[in-house]
Length: 491
Image (tube, rainbow, N blue to C red; front, side):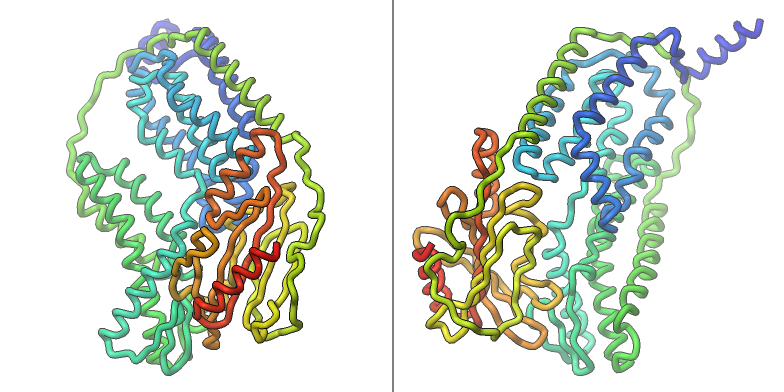
């Protein structure tokens, strides 16, 4: 009698798959998860380091657990669909595997992380089938928020915050002078630094806005509109925040909103903005009458062992390829000649400028002769063993001391160089140029340099290279062109 009652309860609820009746499905799912963890271990290890070490991406720890909870909330609808393996998922799985291998070869963490968190929802899609995956499409896509991406927006958000706050200050009659990202008022000087870009709040707002739209809005138009608001609102709010901080400092003669005060004010302000964003969501929320739906009993999953055999073979081949690349001994010998070979130098100390370069094997810094100590040259060599020639961690100037004023292009020796014109807090102006040298080839593009290194690794060749950074006083292009010619010809 009790068994019959339990069976009826299960059929009515439609939310249970028993292990005894579906042993092959659960074992296959567990095996796929283990393969994903083993194959993506390097990507998982590095992404956890970023989640933990960078406050912008702390939310990454909660994305995948949150996605599985969203799937749990949809369990009745999900299990009412036919569960069967779908080979269509290979259109995502195979490119993701290749992207991961390229990430390993080029030590490109963005590729590693993107492939890792693209593979997970794709494998779930393969396991449960297309029709079932459509019912949990948002939770599967939501997993992509685990990818730590968005820091590339910092310079643009800084510029937007500076432009907007300056416009508001001018509207309210506050006297100011702007140089790059430095905003100077009679009471003091402010720098719209990276911490003031609002990128962490921008990303958090996007995640929260997307989640709120999925859980509380029904209309597709309203969901899209609210997500758009969650992207625009934090940018506008950050402009108001920067404006408010400078205005408070102007009114109080720098007694408030200076030092750590502006960070504290900022967090309280952003908390208030999140509340306002959710309030907008409540105003957009539709009144929907809940309807009781009848759910059918879960159907027995259909497992294709041929598809799983192909999947396991792909994982084994990809893992072996990735391990071979990782263990390949491409260690390059130290450069046989100085980085700045045959270049005359001067002993000067006219500028405090120094690029921020992470973990170079060899570094050299000189002042070019016949420039009256006006041109400083930095060179570094990277073996690509536990370091990277091309990396977002490298900075051609310290953003705490210098601010980018504008960028121009310069054509010299058949190459187009990007010239970064920066200003310091004390008014010092510099023009900075960077380029790379790999296999005695000059590259002015970091992307082309990385592609060339990647090709070398895949062919089993060394990917070591050199970086050159040149800083000339002032924004005069003539002296800069001459210096580039001297350096390139002297190598």
